[in-house]
Length: 256
Image (cartoon, rainbow, N blue to C red):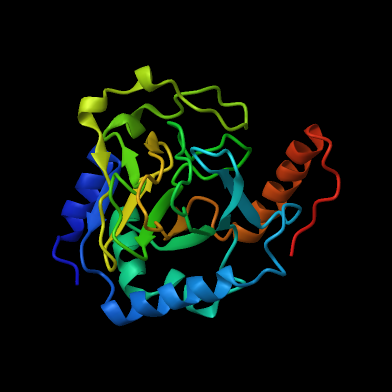
């Protein structure tokens, strides 16, 4: 249940670039999503290095390349597709945007024990027409902590826009870009959500725990900022991925 007034959510998001809402979803729904994540992990027909749907991360100590995420996920999972349009979530997004939200991107990230963290970066990609209202919603399927590699962000820096070259490529930022004393770890429990701007610089640590850190990452744009763009985004994203794989002499990629 929302305990924060709409104006307060909008004010905090505008000021800090992120919002946390505690206890938005009931325990039964989160249990269902955990079971769904386990079912999907058994889809060995999909988990393949050539499949553009799959993301991979190395083990932080052994360097072993391991499966890390499905991107996209909603077309594989009715329960995940359902939560993307859950009225409780859409109400939060309405309050932050001041207008309806459109789903732009959807991922299920597993981050198993030993998974390497992500360097400091922004999610906004300077492709033509990429929505500047882009934000991501984090929905944890289990408690997220700094020891299992929760997202860590830096409030207020989203107001500066792109902090790297706006050339349409992914860039990691040097840690000197931010003041680590201002870091906010998104330590969440199942049922909580956090959302943050595509311009908010963030990173994550390695998962040094013995527990998984499963999370849904659902990204949205404001309706007035391009409307429904998910299908177009994934077409463009897959074209970009194929070019990147080709740079490493990988020409056998597919999407399934």
